[in-house]
Length: 317
Image (cartoon, rainbow, N blue to C red; front, side, top):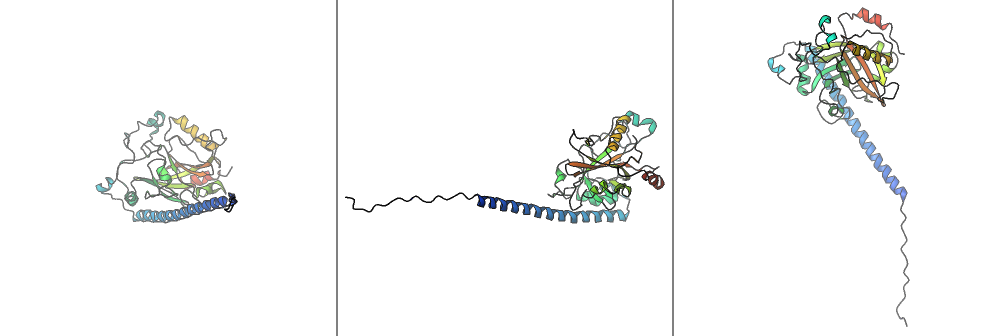
């Protein structure tokens, strides 16, 4: 006889795995990460804007002083831009059919007295090699190190998504550099190279064809002669290999390159470019494509009258 109480074992209710809770948690986490990312972007963008305004003010103030004397201490302030065996007056490294009878000199001075008005920028960052100005669009220092560091570092070498405008590591500023390649981010706040997209519409080049390029030693004026939106896909019809020409083997190679550039240009061919010209190439992103501005150094023969006459044949294609 079983005098004890009998107990029936009741199984515990199974808890259902609630997928909705997991999805809500994941969405909340994604939202937090997104908000954090946007916050960092806006904070760094604002910091970049303040920094750029300060740099521009410093640069304009130095230019306004118009002082030309530089002490020997200033010359020793930093190392030469690019170690090179090319002497300032040497022509040996230039293509054989681009020297001699044509009387072409090296394209840049890379040894000498540093310009007085460039000193404040150079003191702040010894990677600085130049300054580029397109009135109302670009007013930026140019640095040179490699093709990665300044993608996400500002001029003071602090982490910043805006980066800094930089010279391609394979296009160093040397005496024989016939084509300099400069990169800058296409920022939504229109900083860096964010305003260059204006060249793709409204015949913008017609009123913004000139830019100023300064180095540590010299100041030049350049004329933009082509604007290309090109693909990085080698199989695309608008692919253009523009980044491999710091110099050219000979006259034919140079002219073939210019023909390719004009073939892809958004604008008509209006400005003469020949093998004795020095080129400046600006690059930024437009979606998965690259927007590339091609400029040549203004010649002594390029008067206001001759430029205006050439502009009569310029329009968007």
